Length: 411
Image (cartoon, rainbow, N blue to C red; front, side):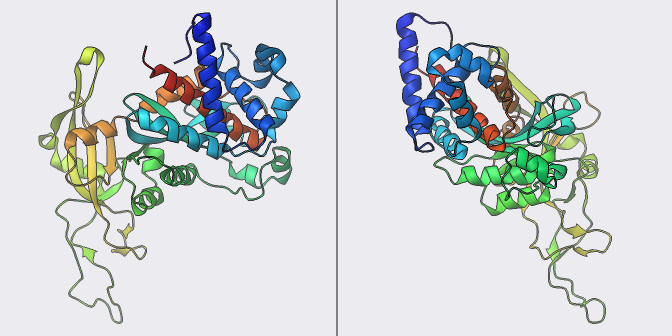
């Protein structure tokens, strides 16, 4: 994805297109000329060759055009809106990449010290273990011609929220309070849904999919999803019916909501009852040399049972009957048990091939992280400013968007 070596005339043309792109995506967020100049320089520094994309080595490569102190202030403290930059880039890039889904995920930013906002010893999928790092939650639009980030949120652990001294040093705004990663993720999705973008089904791993509140908020906002869940997630089987009990119950008790005619059960139990006879082989994407990639799936209409109190035989809160949705199960040939489970609120008429493709599409975000970190220095920010982290991720998003558009230009 990085810009390849080109001749002098082509290099001038690329630089001119970068300057035009920077002017387009930075103008709304940056009201002062010096901000726009520094923003353009920072984009150049991220895109030009160089192993390290932290501020000091970038300034050295940019030469006399760049002033270190001015760029540092621009990055760490200047009051420009990083969200508007990300939104403008998304509205520019998403329409040309054939978006199929929005992917919600998080990634680690390894750190050596203890003063960077949100840093602590915590599990990171990037490290594959517990280590000293920050965790960033992100949302990405993925399509058949590329990807584009739709938002970033820095996860702030509870001990950070309660430590006034560390908060002041990292310049964390007073209004920032503890939020879980799924809560941060929902906010990113709802914000992007308000932009001038075509909506797409939201995908996410079990850390997000098993969160009941996340699924309910997405459904309530009219957003579709295909989210991984655990095999322990309880559901009502397809044949379950809901009705108001004939009996008035115990003395003085009145039923106000329909009740299921049978108990809920873990997904793994339902799948075990259905067995391999319920499987069908589905092609879900093209592989190397155009060869179709297939696997065995189940597609079952169920209702999630997260608000049903199994032990008391009643609803734990005032809710409507859970909506019917798809349970998608992958059970690869030769495996003794299924490998993955998903819940989806896509319409009942959705074709199995689309459900399977969306369920297995989340892998593209890993390629996105690889490009954002390996080529554009997403995890190279060395500052200790809360706002600086958001500024850096926004400008990396802009650089990523520019390179995507360059790659899609006619030869």
